Amino acid sequence: MGEVAVEANMEAISKSAKRIVDEIHTKIKELERQLKGEKDKKKKKEIQEEINSLKNKRSKLYANIVKSLL
Image (cartoon, rainbow, N blue to C red; front, side, top):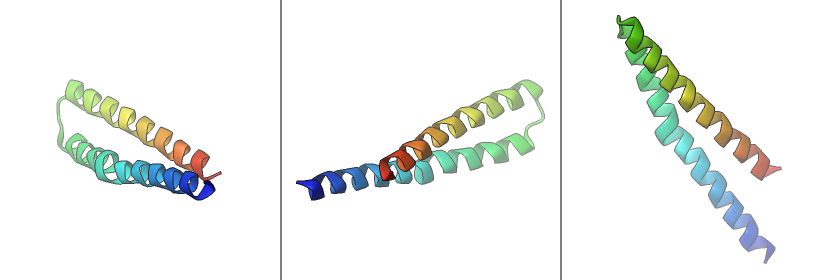
C-alpha cells in the first residue's frame, strides 16, 4: 500500500518537474530574448510582467516538489 502512495507521489513530482522544464522555463527564456530586443516601453513592461508571472508559477511548482519530497 505504501509503495503505491510513493509511486503516485513520485509521478506527481515528475510531472511538476517536467512542466517546469518543458513549459515554464522554455517560455521564460523565449520572453527574455524578446525583452532584450524590444524597444517599446509599454511592450517591455508587458513582457516583464509575463516573465514575473511565469517565475511565480515556477516557484510554486518548486515549492510543491520540495514539499512532496519532505
